[in-house]
Image 1 (cartoon, rainbow, N blue to C red):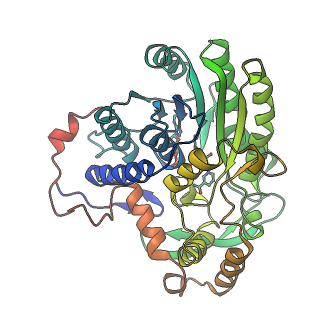
Image 2: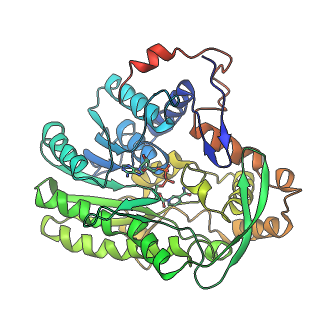
Length: 397
Ligand code: NAI
């Protein structure tokens, strides 16, 4: 079967498994170029391991000099009569395959990270694979819904401003268009629900669960990923519902620090750069900024993808306590927020219109990243070759 991209707005309805493999190989190569630092984690649990920052964390730690043993939790779907499955499904398969070939131990747990069943599977796997304890937990879930454990009903996040409406643009990869959008302010309920879904509550509850089950090693660390961004994006992000959820995540770090104090552990927040991922393209109002940012950072030789960010996190910033900001956050958005970068981004944004965005900004680069998330757009993959569906069906994460 020949596989083509099927895009609906900002959602990819198909993926190309051979291209997913190429994406994994590219990231592995970059991780292998890193130099060893001291105190690297050896046994790592990654929640949200199949794409974006979680996948890059896993690759950096497994194939970089840490040589870590990893357990990856994700929510992905395999092949069915509805389609080929999700890119994350194949990412899990090819990461595990490469890890085994490289002599590392690794496991995939595909299930809902909010369910007791998945937690139990994680506990069992830590006992069998990691000698009973992990020394790092990466929390990289990005989701729009979370079940309320008491009622079974769902909290749903809303990506909205707070207080007043915001005008902006949203990208449409299917029609190559920038559409005007007006985002109405969130209600009290929408704000609270977004904090429930993307705030720190679930991170804390995972750490409590792991601690209560004696699955955390002495000195265990945990990290969750956040975004702050420049003034220009604050109305839609930092001062909107998502930003409030991230503020809650930042505060939760202190609760987890207290929880880990008995084992000399530590909780961190890494504030990452804005990047095209499956989750971020859903944030209306952010894409014009991404288009301008990509253009400027590439011109200055500062552009990074998820793997470069995670390599810099684990092999450069990880143990440098002196390098944190006033709040103690690890800043991987340092290059993004450089004044010269932001000045040029603001100049571009002031000129950007739905008519000129493909010329003045890096639409091609953003679109390529989006396609590559789903295994399309790699020059070393022959997309005219049919994919062997029967062989793919035999692969399991
Ligand atoms: P992503 O969409 O690429 O990855 C999300 C991961 O979560 C996937 O592995 C998915 O399978 C997993 N997941 C979602 N729901 C799940 C569930 N119920 N059970 C188990 N696994 C589940 O997202 P991305 O962008 O890598 O985001 C990860 C974190 O990084 C988020 O906290 C996000 O806010 C943060 N971040 C993202 C930035 C960006 O520009 N993309 C910038 C800064 C921070």
